[in-house]
Image (tube, rainbow over all chains, first blue to last red; front, side, top):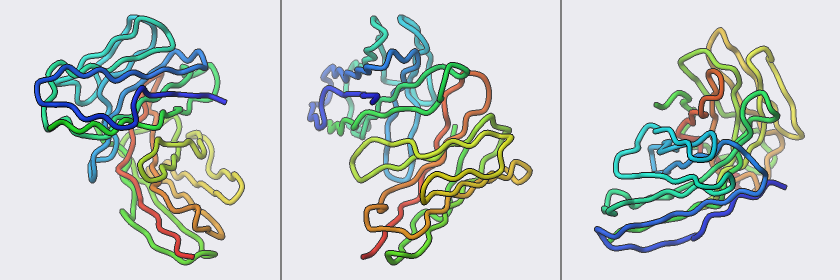
Length: 115
Length: 111
């Protein structure tokens, strides 16, 4: 079974803090994604990566950065957390199109509160 | 960019009834997928239908795709309380591009 794990289920941080959200997958997937989910807005793509050391901006990258030093790990970084970044953060991984089922496998999510 | 739009936003039914959710999208797609999310958890993939397919079944799930109308429907037959969740459609448009998710339908199945 594919497993995607996220470092924390719940996280409370103060405004201005640097925040690291870690995501690890154990299925050797090339593709990894970070989303945030807010009521009424659905899932919005922040960043994604198709390979190690590779990153692409999604729809809402402002205020975030990412790091992918190893294939299995994709980190989301909030350089200076703000209250409008309070949200549920979801990580996902998948195989590339054409190399098997293209469905995304999601982690359990991190509910981040910035006070 | 939001491509899929689910309808209705919320649906409440009795156990044993069928639940139908619809998804409309805007551009041409390679495939369309449905996911389920239990409250406060990650999404779980349910079923994928390719653009050249019209209908697909998986257990109590039936998905249809009408590319001429750019729409899909998810039917859950003989619903159970455990089906209570939010359901999302997601479209893959071309190449290895990320999926684009809709805002979801919140289904409540009352025992």
